[in-house]
Image (cartoon, rainbow, N blue to C red; front, side):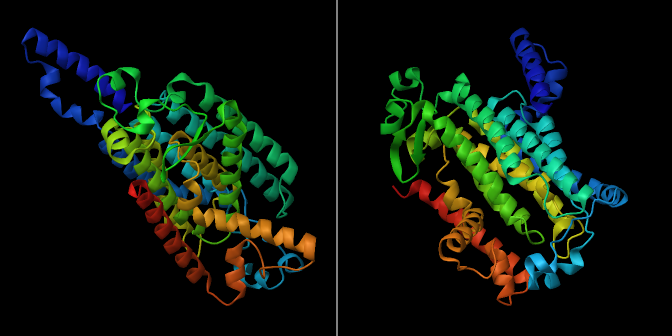
Length: 404
């Protein structure tokens, strides 16, 4: 919306300038602000926060009236953990609709929705959110902790991820990263990576100023793996009040910063030597909207939570973050910046693998946040300490940009 207003104003302003007259465009010259990504990204974050806080109580009341309480696993399933989480029975779930709604509205207001990076991230988020909603609905309807079968959910995740991956690989504006031939001819890109603009099939990491490998079309299944893996990792992290929400804030904020830098030719190519695309900066607005929405949701989701995001929120957030990492050509860096998500997912993989192969458990319970609960940590201690780890990993990941 605001970019369209700016475009209309700019055309009128240029016409007035050419004619030497001062009309309405000159009077409303403050609309020039709408061209700046920094202004629109900050505004998007603020608007999504306000929307979440204002509509949060209404959404919670509506979810309570619909009796969509979160089913809690029984003592037979989780033993001692059932005693710790018994008080959460009946807390409304599907609160992720609040996050998704706030993000999409803020993005429509402040970003260019037809920007390919915005479009693919928003659509992936909405599609994963719909899948999560179906899963939550089945849990609530059947009053069981198991929703859609794992196999069926994985199949649908792969379908969504493959569609997004194909769009990312074949879309012309996305597929060309780095300096343009004209910029190279003008001597504006004197760095190694910029001399041959990389394509979407390249795999990069900040420590290496050249692409690590180019997978060409085989990058499509890799992209799908990133999206599905991130979506499931966030879902596994969402087991304590505010844990996934707070961790998402640090990860989304980091990638908003990365997207903004990657969209600026000089900062990306001459100073940091990271993949550059002139369209990618707009993605910072979407990610800042996600940051604001998570802050607003955390208002109600902090311990003791009044609402849970459910799979509706966790699958949507994970899908959006995985897609954003691909868009910024920093897929491998997500392992560092999203280290808490990786730790949670790996704890489940190791636990299941160890039990099947050795008939022994590595952790008292997985995901790993439950392990620390059973060690005697209070829920708040686990949450805040994991937030601290997430912030430190995000800072470390950003620091890697300028090591080499």
